[in-house]
Amino acid sequence: MPNRIIKESICTSDTIDKLSWFEEVFFYRLIVNCDDYGRFDARVSILKARLFPLKSVTEKEIVNALRKLVEVGIALVYEVAGRPYVQLVTWAKHQTIRNKRSKYPSYEDSLKTSESNCKQMNANVPVIQSNPIQSESESESNSISLKTACAAIDIDTLDPKEAFEIFWKEYPRKVSKEKSRQWFAKNKPNRELLDKILASLKKHKLTRQWQDPQYIPHPITWLNQKRWEDEVDCEPKTKTVKPVPDWYSDYERQVANFKPYEEHLSDEEVEKIFEDAKNLF
View 1 (cartoon, rainbow, N blue to C red):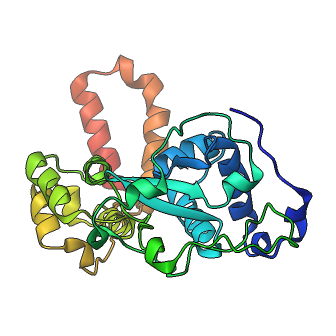
View 2: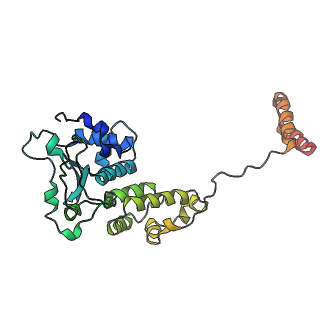
View 3: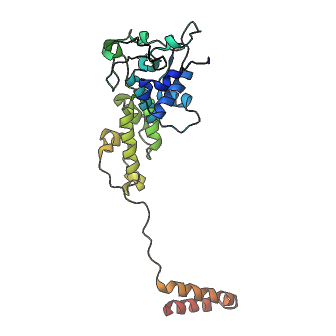
């Protein structure tokens, strides 16, 4: 991967100043991973693995950081053939393009799809503004029209197959797998909904009812009835321990004292002595 250029003007950039520390680090790591045309795979799992291979970072943090870059005008997220990509919007002005072809589809490729399938980012802002890498004195807008910006996709979307695998791993009763898989394929839950489902599932697994597998509903039933919306009263799984009677410690001590003499007595004599000892306490 070629070296990338970052100018000192980022230190006084108003655009960069809008980013949190993590979002800024996310941006710099994205720069060094983009291809020669400033493009990269925007699947959250790929971004997490490539940008933070040695850090413990959640997918939610990745999604929020990417959304912020789009919001302030640093990046554009678009979709081609059902797969999301990210483009740093003024890359060509500040980086050297060596390769003749990009590794990833261009934003223009996404415009060839039906505009009815276009969705703007949740931030609902134009994907514009000056590049934070360039000098603040360079005020050329390099803007992308709002009509064009509708190609930005919702990065909260989740592959139904991936969502199903996550759910299936957590659900304790492994029946009606194919029906459950079809539910995810049909309903296509986003990350927010999947998080709600998993959080509710975690609570359900702590209830007394779910400690017995026969009382755990089939996963497809649980999904169809939207049981993640139930109010769940989590009960502790620990069993109540009865207190030890006061006399028991004296009984144990008497038994311990008797042990050395036990081998010299018959079974009948030992049994009688123990019965008599119990009656004393």
